[in-house]
Length: 158
View (cartoon, rainbow, N blue to C red):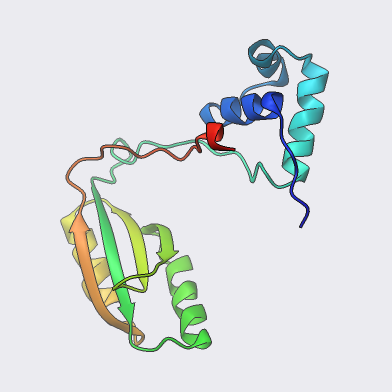
């Protein structure tokens, strides 16, 4: 795939949209000193190039009743291609899992889990995750305090 070269205007547009995905082209225009039509064309080009993958609202997990967040490390019994796909399907259908990563190190996967409370977390781990036929070992850490949870990228590095 051909990599799109971005300039300072594109970086400014991307940075602004990371902070507020609902920003209008008129709003972008004021921030980056380009006309709204130029911002619209650049935004469309950034979307077409796949640099903008989508727009979403950031929800407050705590205010919505998701009072417990845990980081869960999972090691599998089998490491074949079919096992990886089967576990990926399980994760995809597990609403508690907000993010999942295949990682290097002592675990095969790291899961970011959000649930209402400790009972819901115990149910997920004991009734669904541990009984999965591919799961060998599970280690979990309850998040006590979030120091940084930013989805945006530091565009000064590109």
